[in-house]
Image (cartoon, rainbow, N blue to C red; front, side):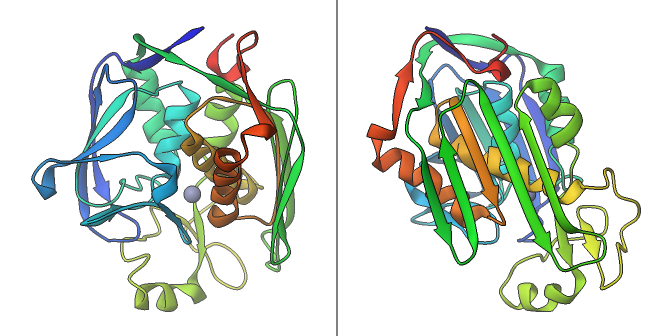
Length: 288
Ligand SMILES: [Zn+2]
């Protein structure tokens, strides 16, 4: 059995919410509770539990509750998952996780520096034991048994800088930190007016996303030639993290997005015959 883990020291961040445009303060605080929960200081200290059934996953992954929402959780969730942090209080002044530079690298660096410590509650690893494919309008997400946590992603955009990009890897913390965490979110200049009309992308800038016009990027050089598909893999890891258990299995996404990622989490919750608790082997990314 493995123990759950929390942070050794608290860490604070401040930054803009890419969708709300709000200036947000966030502090990740050690907790012995055995769960991840939010405390909204701007709503009188309201406590909101992380609940995968209360997610709205259209343009970003968003936790919805009676009096509000917490937007853009996916990059933070990916970092917590990769460091095995599953007992944590997330104090927020604002309704969104700060976007930072559009990637998970600043959050990952801070967590790496702060360090993690075990707490008493036990962690339960889940192994996928049967294959299944979810489909939605030309996109698909398949899950199947595998020795470790294996992620494959393919995207296909009719854009000269993107085209078809594919990535596949066995997830380790090292791969995550070097190859996945630095990949930034991206958006198309032509979509921005429509998004803003819907109250989205209000905080998006050239410093917090890769922004593309019809020919190329207007936000400076890419960090990787295939930064786009790497970022989609980051989003998938962050969305799978909402299942709440370290996973052993292969997840293959083709032209998917937050909605389909989240459907996979709901599928796992509703179909426990597709997985089993694993006592003997732990995912490589947890360090064993
Ligand atoms: Zn993202």
